[in-house]
Structures are given as structure tokens and as C-alpha cells.
Length: 403
Image 1: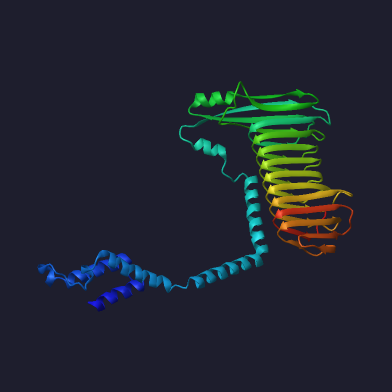
Image 2: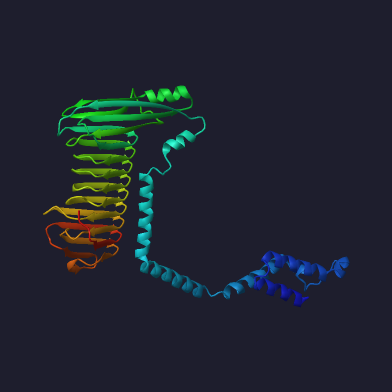
């Protein structure tokens, strides 16, 4: 019987059975051993069944201690550390590819949003049980003198700006509201008042609640066409801004929403707390800031002076030419900076990182590298370009591009 017990213990040590299964087998072997003696009530003192439970637990604990002692803990720790170092080194070597993939994904997401392929809050509301919708419309036309400003104030909804071809300001709005039934939806819609009229030296368009409190489950989307020379200022709590082919000073302050500007000619001052800003085919003085979002400047059509910054996000800028004597700044706290300089984008480059790398391609002269900094000249030093990130990489490359 000792041989059978040893076999059970070896099976436990090899991991072929659990401690509970081993104890059950030992119990069974003990009962088999004492069978003939059971009638006398004197089991064999050498069998497991005759031993106290505490003694049997001590045997099992001793076996467990023996198994644990046979494990090379230090060897396992060393192997894990070596594996982590290998993975870290592989990631470091493939860092460029990781950034490229991440950039491709973000660009695809931005393109999807611009094309409207996204899950919209309105669709979610309409999908709620018991919710029905009510719609409304509003319009207003005005004649403004060059140099005047149109301001748009909205709580929830998108704003689309375009160029007017007849010299007039054309404002259109669509209203959508939701409620538990038709009457509540209509009442919610009617609690929003849209007004347009002169305010000071400008012209204001407002979507605001009637009475006290802000109505929920209602949004107003604006379409505004403005002639050249008219400045526009947009203030929104929640919603996107799209501007195309406008000529004038554009100012935008969004709490939550993306900003997309294409073909603008004039000063741009864009700010959103939560959202991306994408600027294409623009030139001049461009200021764009986000707390959480990416900033992108593509294919500028004229010389630029830039002030682009975000707290959490990447910054990408293509520059064909800087305004002579200007100081441009690109900054992020957590994210990467990528600058592509055309052959006419002469500037002195100052780059700084707190945690990351500074990488350059050909075309940068007089390079001086520090531990976390770089200085150089691209072409001429007619302008200054300051680049900085706290946590991220900086890439500076020359490209055959000019506006």
C-alpha cells in the first residue's frame, strides 16, 4: 500500500491530479486497507485513514512545499524581464511604422467624419423607445457692408459656412426636436427661438431658449453664406463647424466639436476644447488651438504665419512659404509633431522635446543637436519655426512642395 500512496504523491507532484483528488485517492486507499479490520474497530495505524486529519494535511503541505521549492522563481523573473526588454526594443526600432499606422487610422477617422460616416447623436435619440421627432425651419437674408461682422451663437448643432455670390448674407436653419409624443416634441421645438439683427457694429444670429432653462433634446443646424470682406464669428457649445471658400476674418470658439476649413482667404482664429481642427488650401495668419484633438494644415495656398497648439493630440503642418519675419509655433503636450517644409519655406528651426526623439530628413543645414533639442536652418532664416512637445516625437522633413 505504501507503493500506491507513493504513486498518488508522484502523480500530484507531476501535476496530473489536484490536491483534492490526491486526498480522495488516499482516503480510498485507506478504506481499502482497513476493510477486514473494520469489524473489530481497530484500523491499521499505518494507513492514511487511521492517521489524524492534521497529519494528512501536513503531508500534503510538505509535498506542496517540495514542489514550490523545485520551481526556479529567479529564472522565471529573469526570463520575463528579458522578454519585456525584447518587446521594448522591437517597439523602439519600429517606432516610425507605429506612428505611420496611427496617423493613417486618425486620418481615416477624420475623413469618415467629414463625409458624414459616423454615429450621430440624433440617430441615437430617434432610436430610443418612445421618442418621436418634430422639425422646423428658419431663414433670414441681410445686406451688410464690407468690414462688418456676422456672429452666430448656438447651443447644439452644426454650422456650415460658404461663400455668397450675390453680395448678400443668407442664413438658413433647420430645427429638430424630440419628445415622448408629437405634442411634447413640438413643444420642445417651439421653446427654441432664432433671432437675427444688428448688434453694435455687427449682425448677430442667435439660437436661444424661450423662457428659463435650456431645452433638452433639440438641435439647430445653421447654413450661412457670406460675401467677401465680411468677418464671421461662431460660438457653439456642441457641434461641428465647416467653412468653405470664405474670404474674411473667421473666429470660432467651440466647446465640443470638430472644425474643418477649406479654401479660406483671411485670418483664421480657431479654438475647440474637444475636437480636431483640419485646415486645407488656406494661407495667411492661422491660429488653431485644441485641448483634446489633432491639428492638421495641408496644402496652404499662400505664405503662412502659424500658431498651432494642442494639449492632447498630434500636430501636422505642410508649409510652402512663411510670412517673412514671422515667428511660427507648433506645440503639443502629449503627441507628435510633423512638419513638412517646401523649398521656399525658409526658416530657422528650433525644436525641443521633454520625452521623445527629434528626427530630420535632408534639407536642414547648420544643425546643432542637444540632448533634447535641435537647431538648424532650412533654406534661409527669413522666418522662425519653434517646435515643442512634452511627450512625443518631432519629425522635420523637406518636401518638393510650394504654393
